[in-house]
Image 1: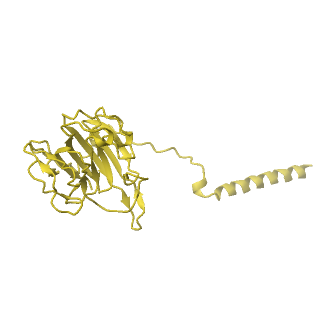
Image 2: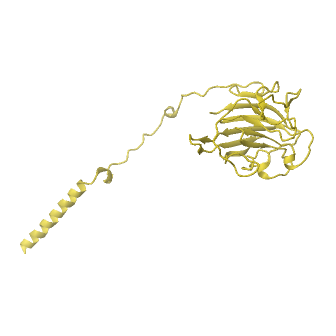
Length: 266
């Protein structure tokens, strides 16, 4: 009987030794963490979270509130920054004595001589002096980025049309959050942030573009995705491209413009 008891005890001791050896052979990354987690040092000095460099560049403003790092595209003195979108000849829109510019119906679209990527654009426009037509036929123009992506310009004051084609719509893609259009005897202000889409070397789109639009001080497009080109007929297209001009549309309505400037964001 004693021999049997000694045998059982020996088996138990051997089993415990084997289990201990197995635990010792477990890789370190699989062992249960037994040490206490390191606690982050408490920050008590506000200077520890201050970042001093790089220091943002200081800019100034002129008498028309144009920032010093902006390129003025139209200030009423000349139309030198623009050409005909059709054949790159002289832009044939009218410059008025009050330093505004008016679309001459039939003269064609105009576009900037310079090509742009991502930009901040400021422009002011006013619907024709005499209210004529309705829907898309009333005070229609548009501002295009890279010759492909349109933010609609339209006299949308008490003028119903399809919602994705009214003033500040990303044409046929995104409806504005509200209609902030003023009557045709008042100037409208557009402040537009355009982030250009990106394409890889094979022509595949790797990042969609985006628009933020503020109309008369009111946010109407909140960093929305550009689905592709803003087509009049059919779905958006995503043909690869690089930088391109900013274009203003002649839609056969004498829309007025003034105070146009752009800041490059690339």
